Length: 241
Image 1 (cartoon, rainbow, N blue to C red):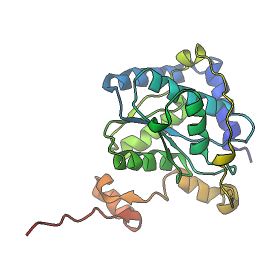
Image 2 (image 1 turned 135 degrees about the vertical axis):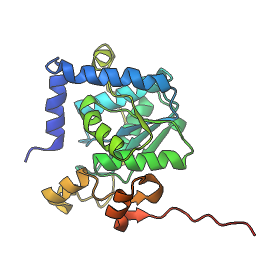
Image 3 (image 1 turned 120 degrees about the vertical axis):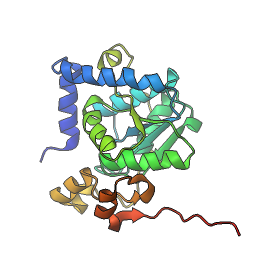
Image 4 (image 1 turned 180 degrees about the vertical axis):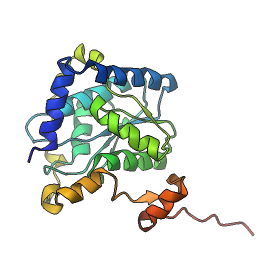
């Protein structure tokens, strides 16, 4: 079975080679609309598998774009999201380590280490952002992932903006790979997701079927009914005597 790493790499080669200009022009349009609300308190950057040797094209794109957004002042902080899914390396920790090597201060980098699927990347990072007191939040990832995460964000009416990668900007950037020590990003006792879940279980995860929702984020009654077994109740308000 073809891995998601191979699929994403192939699609991004098409993007960077100019074979899908209509697709990334849409992303550029979304970016220019998104920066109208900058600066953001934080941007969410979903993870991607790391092989322990060098970064994949997808990692290169997402991490350098996060650094670009921070250095331009479009965001004050970056939240990298991702557990150890396909390899023993915790994706968010790897990305955070690279981002710090690219110049983002450690104090402005946060990691969400629970998510194993793209929808979880977005939602759990959103919850982390709220916990940290951030109110203006955006998703910053490649055009491909933006295209389907946009639908997820809209479906559940999550207050998350979009700052997708602008391919033409990426092409003129110095996309060098800094040297990092990845030992601290390894998860002990790791078992890859494909050994824990079959194809259909993983597909359900991709569709957000395992998300533990906070009641306050499910604004529509039909979703509260549908996900009643996966809802974290809103804290009750204690009235003062």
